[in-house]
Length: 168
Image 1 (tube, rainbow, N blue to C red):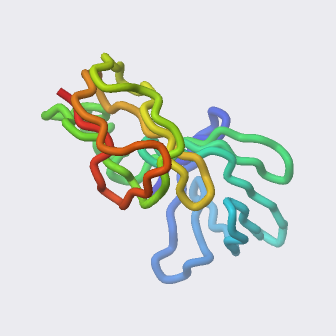
Image 2: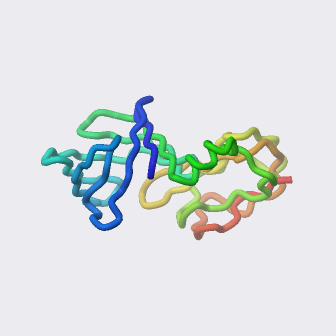
C-alpha cells in the first residue's frame, strides 16, 4: 500500500500483485498503462484517458517530486507501507542513531556541492545535487551536524550507496 499526497489531497493506492496494470485508488479499482518515454517523461493511460507526465524534480530520499501532467504542475509526496507503519507506531522521523554518512541513493553524477568542509548544517538542508537518469536530485541532511569530510567533487560519477559526505 502507498499513500500519495498531491497538492494536499491524499490517495490510498494498493497495487494488484497478480495484474500489474490494476490498482485500487481509495478503494476503487482502476486499470492503467504506463510507458516510460525516457528523460523523465511518461505516457499514462488510465480508464481510457491519456496523460503525459513529466518528472520535473525528484528527491528520492524524501520521496518528494514535482511533476507536470498534461501541462499542469503538481507537488507529490509518497509514503510506502513502511513509512505508514512507522508513523502509526509513532516512530516516523525518529532514529535511534545519528547518521554519520550521506550516501548516494542511486548511481549518478555530482552536479553541485551546497556545503563545505567544517560547515554546521541543519536537518533537511540541501547538501549535494546529483544528476541521475537525466534528472536533478537534491540530497539533504538527515540531521543537524558538522561536515567532517567531503568524499566527492563536482563532476564525479558515483555508485549507489557510495559515501558522499561524512558527518562528525
